[in-house]
Image (cartoon, rainbow, N blue to C red; front, side, top):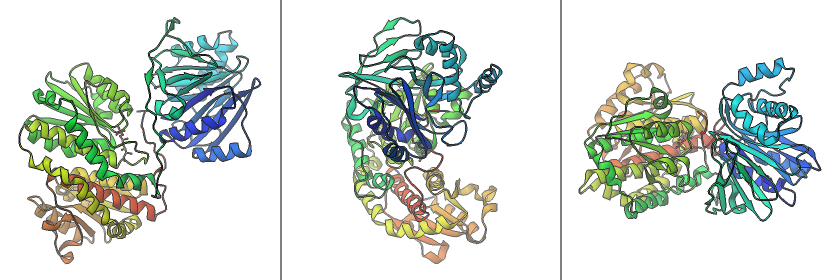
Length: 589
Ligand code: M6R
């Protein structure tokens, strides 16, 4: 993960680098740092925690220099500390790195044998050490970067400053994304095109193995054969950095945006030229995703099975990519991802592309998955800043419902009912104070169990993920029917059990399972609808949510679960937008 940014300009670059880092912070916020070249000498500022800490440091200790590289870190090797923060400086080299060095143990041992002792725990510093060694051996910066490919296993996007080379930045990539850009004497680089914001209107994505030199002139790019090449530029849309408006967190704002984001996603899919019917000839569907996106797939499996009348497999992308299961001709593999960059999901897509047709349900238009899948089914959640997926999840459900409805080829009353989703979601949002009261109880517990059947099972897992992710309360979601096969042992007097139990044929079964938990002292909270509402003394506390058929039901229940997690986490004073140890886009496996 991590984010890298860099700039050469005719004036000091620290301010623009900080702005770039702020836009990249979703990639990791364990520590941040900037190094510049000022009159041929390195200047460096690093700090633990988010970019605002680095900003304060630079305010008190200004950072001069017209060429600089910047980094925001999601720790992989070694804890978040100043020592482990990038840029790493070794001899003539200052370096930032995004990616993972897989042979770091061997590299560290080799460097140590050669008398070079790393100062940090990171794999990235080893790259700086190797490059400095190569420069000492007489290689040019471009050749040194190219030589990395022979010594390093794993993925990297690297930007380096070299003392004695003037205001130039040398970059290369393998496996990790990197774009460069040029405008009126200023060169830029970033691991994410969007982070360039208003500074660039077009970017040049580098190909694997490219090495580029950034200066006051347009970037010079060499391919892995050392041939000078021209890479195609593409436009980037100028998007203003989103603000929290009147909300106290991005997550709460994003929860409240759902009436619009769902409507937009549905409208866009119904009015676009997109031919989802090309999925109609599939003899089976395989869905692959991670985290919350995986739960969206699990939830929609039954919708798709019923609609298409073909088998539907749902796979965790991180398992699927290494299991490499046979994909029979006629199968369509659909990846689902907010970012379109999740490393495991992207790998699943690339594996499947060698065998079958592919589609991507994805929220970021210019993401790798959007570019590589045969068919793109866009979600229109807009930029999601909160690490917890909320509006992206419900937009994925809306898109999956849209796919199911297209495959059904006929009158689909369940799908038509989604026209009323914005109104129903506003009704759930109005229940926020009531949900907050319940959430405060969940937040005080040492563990929370979520139960459901059918779609409720996927929602139970998603609800539990949300609570543990942002409140750090241990929560697990189970199929209600599984309770007595093991999880019931976790129930003791006072254990909260949240049940997703709308009216319908499965409700009585779930309620019976809840009685089993209640008999062991569990404190039950049932999320249901008017037709499924029961007196509190029957089973426990009840929150009555708006009614809806399966597609709408899933959206309604999702929003209620998001609010429970949000209020639980806020009552504990958590930073809901930036939960500890996590990052928004998981670009390492
Ligand atoms: O960008 P993606 O949808 O591919 O991300 C997958 C997961 O990393 C993501 O859904 C994660 O589980 C969320 N933070 C959960 O809220």
